[in-house]
Length: 165
Image 1: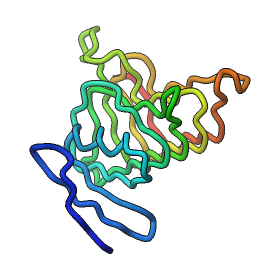
Image 2: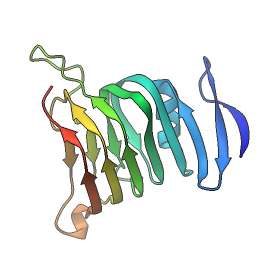
Image 3: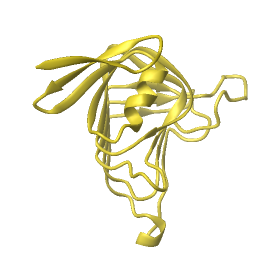
């Protein structure tokens, strides 16, 4: 395993490890998470501890978002797989607890899903995730029945707990 330091925010740096399966990084802040989710290169992103996010974070193609241990949790915002111009293909989300933006009093911190799969995504796996506290939906899948509306294909949601706050 070869490693190197990469400055991802003014406050902290992270180590990027090059392994046989690609580049791996451990993130502990929302800024680090957002940075690596939007990079064009494939990454295996390990989430360590609780990360408070305040908005929807865009996840582009070829990312694995993996919880590191029992304390891996995202709170507040959500994950949006892909955009109209950048596909969210080949994304794995595994072993994550996600508590959305619902504040428990009838209001929301963020009017968002925990996970949104947008038009035209292909090869998505959400496994062993616990999703709750969301304002709208635990997992929203948006797309059409024809290619003009962006077909979503090969989406697997397995062994997850999806429930209200």
